[in-house]
Length: 152
Image (cartoon, rainbow, N blue to C red):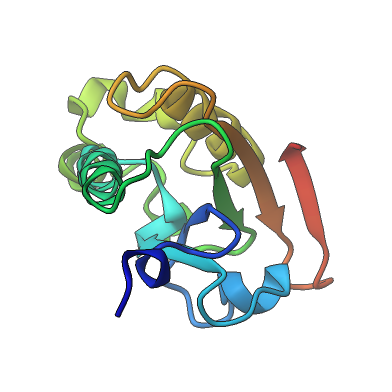
């Protein structure tokens, strides 16, 4: 396998939820090998996701490229997400989100659009990612099947 084959053809990484109703590749019309997908509960940008993105940058650099200009990270969350049922359970959410219990409210767990905007902001400020990386955010409505761009 060549180094080129290791890289997603569209130079895109999607951060999405593990919910089986929300398949990022299917929703975005991507074919196998076109995007890389990181999935977790809620599709949230957590400290673990940031570490994983930093590791992916290292892999990309080892393959002769860089995760920066010409690349895009898409935060894709959805309506009726199971994580919204934990809104208010700050003790459970704090460790997962990497914040103190009294900071969980700022993560907008009950509102996917606000949560996407928040997580896009985290990625915008992440210094371990390359310069020029585009970050966008979307919310998939599981009832209508529509995808709404929170940040194109």
